[in-house]
Length: 66
Image (cartoon, rainbow, N blue to C red; front, side):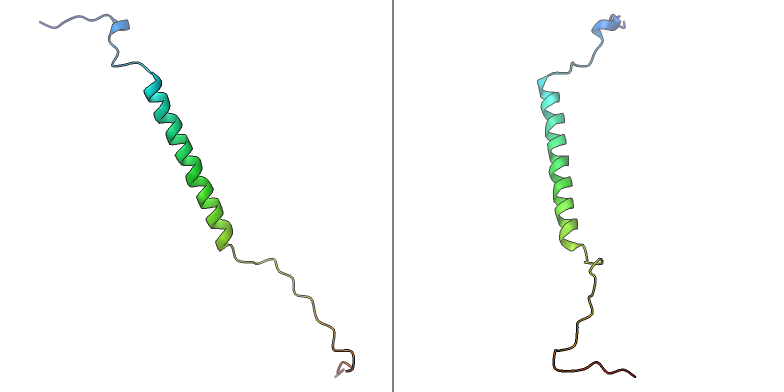
């Protein structure tokens, strides 16, 4: 015969400190991974915004006009 259990007693478990610790640990690990990826991304970024400034000729020479 099947046992009849009231709805408020038919829970598998309750949220407690153990579940909270696991959620916080997962969040901290996600932040650590995010930070590592950000640092790695900054290290491998190629310098595409460098501006080249034309250099003036040395003081004893005249520029060649063609």
